[in-house]
Length: 301
Image 1 (cartoon, rainbow, N blue to C red):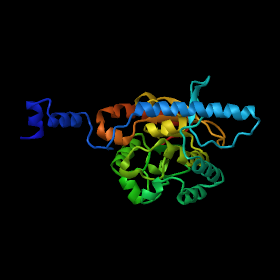
Image 2 (image 1 turned 180 degrees about the horizontal axis):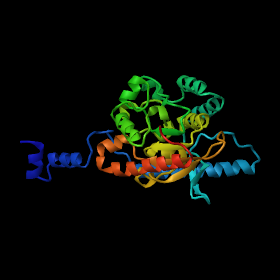
Image 3 (image 1 turned 135 degrees about the vertical axis):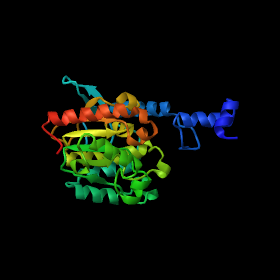
Image 4 (image 1 turned 180 degrees about the vertical axis):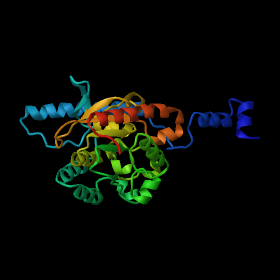
């Protein structure tokens, strides 16, 4: 008897439960223990509040503020309708590793120096289990910068971002608005693959964030497209899920940028492979990106 027939005959059976999971799009087990993401969101907010209080105490004591922050950013509404971030702590990353990453990243003056610094950095345990460092790909002089979450299996093997199945879908998505990889630049929040493609921890993200911040500052793109919830959370310290974050323009700012950069979040291609019915939302986001680029005088082709 097949799983489907068992499920039909006994809706309370284990095969019925497994079939329900498959129908819902759950096709793999990520971990042995459940993960309370509501608790994680609360921890992010609490860490942000603690960082604000620490900075206030620092200003009261007359201490100077460091030039670069390793934490994320909490958004505030501006008069032009864009949401601008103010620097807050993303999570409690190991202080020494985070401070080292911030210092090293700030000293990089070129992308080549930044790549070498990331490859030499030993402050993140993900590097130990990864096969290679996945830095970036595409055209760094292009006006559009894409930021994903972390390398997967294929990316870890080839050393390039978005080369697996989700990367193939992304290529088709970008081609639909006239952009191939020579017309945009792409990287990830994390340069190393998490074991088993698990969700990165807040500490891992916070440790690597200074490198991403400096990466954006060196590239100076005109527009940023955020692929999935992780880069949105990392750069703007937003606890909400991607379905509530996508399609909204925000202004990304950091000390090394000459001006704010408009950033838009969309659904990750890996999510779209599991939920193809949501592609219509991604298409709307791509049209927004195209409209923004055209408004800046940038046209494909």
